[in-house]
Length: 114
Image (spheres, helix red, strand yellow):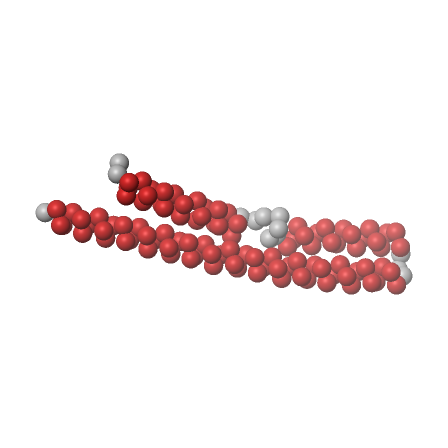
């Protein structure tokens, strides 16, 4: 194998690793981008506060704070999911462009040999 082929394979492997890792983040549910898992923890905390304190001002303040955190967590997880999806599309496009350019160069080099 010549040096150009080795470099080509290294670039291809890097693209594939990036594509797989971004696809994993974008399309499989993770702890950090699954709002249901996050919100369930907050709901359990609200129930614990209700069981301990009953209904007083502290409980209401805590509920407002927890609901605010729930909303922010839900919004940020959606943003993270969108960013990962867009990154996946960019890497996929770059990989396809790389492969297309490689095939074009391969065909041109074969024609020049003839």
